[in-house]
Length: 447
Image (cartoon, rainbow, N blue to C red; front, side):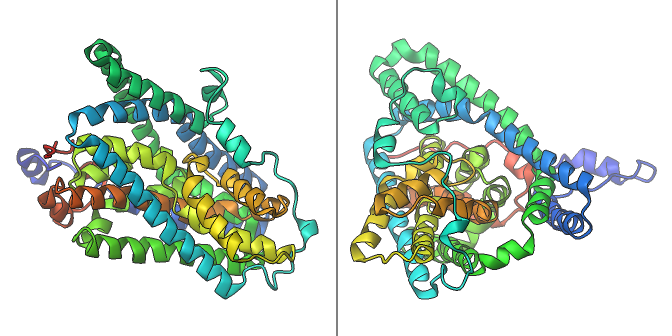
């Protein structure tokens, strides 16, 4: 969004008054991170009770505001995204290619996670024992996963925030609307209006991310401290290194070789979504920003409005591939269980097929319990990882969201519907909140 030349000239006149320069959104996030670390350290070092409570409340309120819009946002986003496919030539081909690349990148990510785990042995020498673990309050299994897709009624999934069931109902409603054709147009118009309303409201919450960052990071440092991280040092490093290899290695390589796109342009365009995902720990909460940056990078709006919501609930390279692979090895070593080649293949299978269980929300407990139950590993191992989970979840979610942008770029490029001028222009202007406010151009989708 360019500045008005007349107003700029007026502001520069003598006596027009001092104008406070606007701080870019990324800089606000970085400032929040630094301030959160400082306040968290002060709280833990000097045992400042009121500050500890304040940080907890600030972070909790920010996450609750994000979650408040999740259920209706997912429903209407999936419904509208499916019906928008009617505007796209070769819609079935695009959807199939999107799902295929979701699976390919998930397999690469889980292979990296397994390789790092086998090399570093993250469960060895931690000082942790099986007694340190505890059973999770909610466990996931394949039976729960398969039977839990279909809800008993239309209300409970929204009240209990069961995203998988919400996705199922939205998909059914979207397909039914496509079959009805013009008769469903009033419902579709209402759904599109509600979706825009929800995205606008959620965008207001996203503006509060710098404040939420202070609370979330500060509370994590104050509550967990560096001592706890030390016990999980190898495992924490493994998760961050694995995610970094996918985020800064695999994705750029795929963009450069498969899509013939500049990785630097990708990071310049997608960075607002990646940094917000790191802070919020929610793929669904980041979804409006993810879709904006995907469209700004040249992906047609009609295709992006399908691929991004679909990816926000199913594309989880960090939470559903790297993390469960490393966690399974970590827990097996703590409980002295030997894993074989068959077990590693099972981990890969679960990562590709069961990733929808993560639901795009903070944490990956359901996916982890699903993996452990499939391998027959003790579910008490989940309790070992819960304390460190918020710190791990930041990097995992950032990787998830990056993958949710990369896949549409690869598919759009290979299908020759990507606006390469829009992609290349990502480096010509700074990416900040003003740029994100600009309405993306609609790119015609060719056959």
